[in-house]
Amino acid sequence: MTQKFFLYTRKSTDVEDKQILSIEAQLTELRAFAKENNLEIVEELIEKQTAKVPGRPIFNVMLARIEKGEANGILSWHADRLARNSVDGGRIIYLLDIGRLAALKFPTLWFDNTPQGKFMLNIAFGQSKYYVDSLSENVKRGLRQKVRRGEYPSIAPVGYLNDVRLKTVVVDKKKSAIISQAFELYAKNDSRLEDISDFLAHQGITSRGGKPLKRDRISFILSNPFYVGLFQYAGELYEGKHQPVISKKIFDHVQEVLKQRGRPHHKIKNESQPFCGLFYCTCGMMITGEYKVKRQKNGNVHYYTYYHCSRKSKTIICKEPCIRQEALDIQVSSLLQKFSLSEDWAAELLKMFEKDSVQAAQSSTAFVQEAQGKIEEIKTKLQRLLDSYLEQDVEREVYLKKKAELMGEKKSLEEKSITLKQKQTGWVEPMRKWIKQAEYLPKIAWDSNLFGKKVAAKEIFGSNLLLAGKQARLGAPKIGDNWGQNQWAALQAAHQLASENPKSFVLVPRTGIEPVFDG
Image (tube, rainbow, N blue to C red; front, top):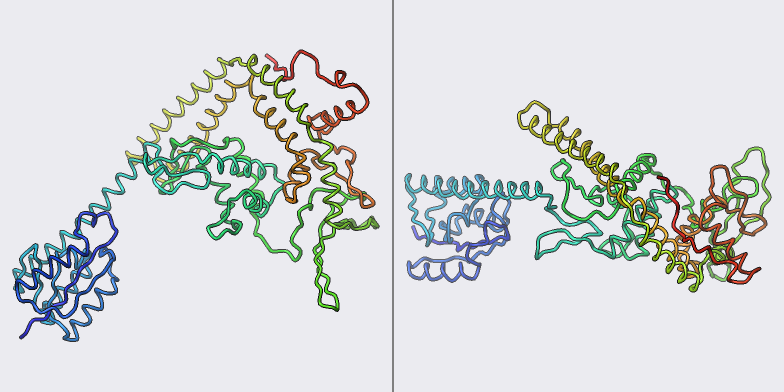
């Protein structure tokens, strides 16, 4: 019987194939081998797919054609090119058993279609499978060791970058600052996941298609412990070597907000508009937004957004008129402008606070030592917990839960320790941030980003904005509000004072601007 061969070459991108000859090299060697041994080649088949699992399309078609009698032999570089799994290896041996496959030729090893030959082929296939299995275990072992060292073994989340050269995760300075702001916004509990998505989109953080991130993606970001220096791997929490970008305190607050808002989300008829939740009506109810579409007979279509009282009171009939979004936008911008910080005031404040911050550094040694002592105790408990788990004295579920609790406690203590060290200078960064924010307020006020204006207005006015007679103004402070005692109220008072008195009368005393700490 004339022997006809399929010339089969394969290469995949798997780690174990890195040292295997390229497709071109295999073809060159196999063509020379076929010519030297006078083998009749029916067709050359090239496949670029792993053989670790069954399902290679070209390989399956080749075996089907052999069953039809188009060929009765296979020429390949090595047995591992044909199979690295037990299913494909078994199919080839079965075809040899029933006579559909008469010969296998390899330049790198000898094979004869005899009981002894099939036995040796079985061993070759077994060795290939064993190599793949042990390589997989070695890779997993390496990843586990990397994780134990605190090195994240996967793609860095948004706000971080994978340093390919050093094989570490580093902070993306621009995006990490934006992510930090997103956490702070959500922690205030007056923003929805959609609002955070809009905020990130305005800052350039979107999906690959350029669209705003979806709710579940935002929820994943806000609940990812990676941003506080921890990470999860195989269901277990580890302490990472990467730099945190938010504090554990803010992260915990965000988790509380997510938990509170974890009710099923139902899409409402009228999506809330940008300024919703910012104003109260004179009747005490909230102001809501309503989107309207007006179609004229001539075919023109106009789109409007109106704000009016939600009229949810069952005892009060509210007759306050509605106001167009464009008109309300101008009024909000005007209100924000009144609380801006001029360049010369900002420069003077920065000069004063830079001088004071240098003189304000003191340490709280006793408190720091106490915190460090507790951290060492937790480290000891973690080691004992691990020993108990390895000795099988503790169930895995109990081990994972207790480990997560101890690591969370340890992270909180470490942050507390840092906070205590910086107690006397903790006001510096918020002060610097506020000066920059107040100086930047005019740009926010006259920008077209309505969500940005809402965030700034919430920061300044809290829940004290009133809409009455189509006019937005500052209402009476509500119980619990600290309006009149915060920096924004002080800035408004300074503006008023400056309009009535010379500049020298407005300047603060020489004693400085840093807050006074007890003990």
